[in-house]
Length: 639
Image 1 (cartoon, helix red, strand yellow):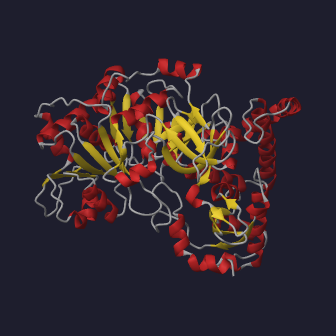
Image 2: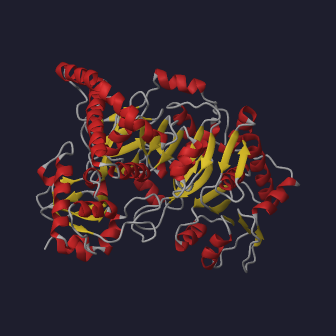
Image 3: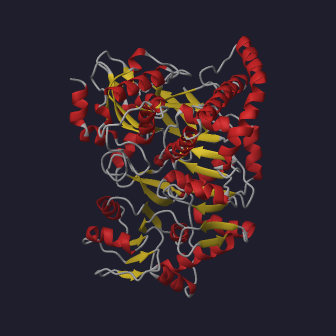
């Protein structure tokens, strides 16, 4: 089936309130307009830089133009490519938009990426210059520069750059000084012109250079404007890596509408939530899980009677929100409730409302205060968010809008609307976006509600992979349909539900196909499980590699009057605990089948992290790498 989006009345209303950039041809043309509309409003605030940086919209637009003029003085020509290796900071945006203002195309990546990967991107992108975060980043990749003929190398810091090279060396201040005395030469942009190269992080193999046009990026602004509207000066808290398309285009969107962006980091985020009281924030599910786990830890530290009271309120509120969902036709497990279902839900809502309000006054209000107390909504993307997290945030009164997309789609294709927030789903398509669900093998259309391969077509779909026509032809059909590689289904109202990756499917010996992500999300509900990855290809039953939550496990052992061994998996009591946790959480999962049961498992002593190579930089498990590293452990599970 094919689902084409149609603009709703609410979406039209939101668009009428937004700043309209339909007349611009290039992304960088939005900044002079934004400066006119929001001149004195704070655009960027980095309290963690030294010294702290705070720029108004007028100052941001001016610095972008000055940086662009500085680049032109260094002979940057329209259409040339420049590598930009830096993490999220105000100067990244100035450099990124300065490059586009000068007509250049940037190839972006974070400074924390592997040096070999940075060297590959620099070489593969045909960059004629290099801009890096600081001297440390330059030192890191110095050995990768080889014989690459670079016109100049620039730091975004004010350090004096040091490197034995024929390329001209500059720092940020020097580029700005050049731009201050060099008049900016206007550049003619084309909407269909290439704006940037974004290299896929992937879970295996070399990254591919995704070619995104100005039109691709501008479609994200107009698409997001149809979903939500802002008041100038409202605050967003920025934590994700800027080289990731999800964070990058969200920043373009919020800044185009006059929001004030505050930069934070994983060490400071909980403090900054309270200090800066953001209205909006985007992140991956792992962050929302971390905040949830912190709250749960505080709950566990309360006296036994108070813990019992908290659990009582959470249980009653869970029933309350489920009743509300049924009444609004927003219960994913019961999208077409009968009259009796609705009557039962109405009675439950009426009876439980006072208890929910009391729980809010005693418990949830305090939890919201930890997020600053002014959140309008959070956006979750970059992976599937577990149902228990959806439930928790809805209970405490914090709205999460889930979404879906890929780097190849700039990235957003679907997002849940505040007025159609179907938890567990990935939202409705952005305006102009078409969705097809087809059979994996035959590519024949599947009916509504049936799982298949997700194909997409719309203004956000990339131009292709840089210097890789074979991969481009494989990903995008002659009719413009992009093959996401994801499995999913669509509801009658057009909500997309991603069920897994086609290549991640585990096939058991009985022929049953298992999508691991939903089961892993269910297992993660357990307070004793920090991370989990399912295994079991060509086996009789599923297995799991589990990274335990040692803090919760130690507390459990203390309560049981036991001493936790150095290797918790050696303890029969711990083994029994995890078997019980896995059985309960998997069986409580909607749509549970007997084949979903996890028959064997192993507890790991080392977590999956970016540093040890088991997570991508977007915090996704690198399944093939984990499988290779723990091959002996996995094999022993099924002996």
